[in-house]
Image (cartoon, rainbow, N blue to C red; front, side):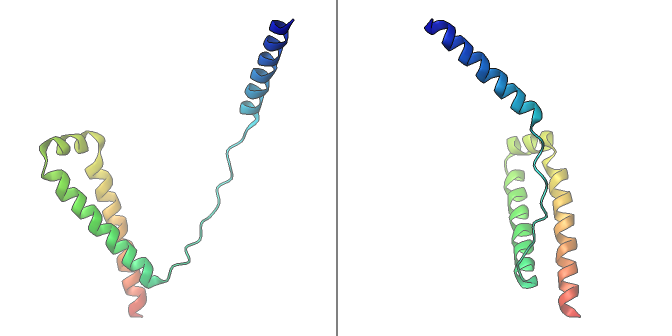
Length: 98
């Protein structure tokens, strides 16, 4: 009798879990607001750019790391990030000059 109860409980639990997974929906995306001042953002972007440059210098100093980075497309991603950061920096610097 205990075996039947255990099996029934297990089957009920599995069907409940399966049903819950099918019905779940993706969480709604929320817009995050940035409460930092322009000066804080500028400092953050410049620090991020510096860290990216330092990481690239470190990667390029080790041939095995260069190979891994190339295989993973790291340099292309870094170039995209660097371009975005420079655009944000330029935008904030122009905004503060006005």
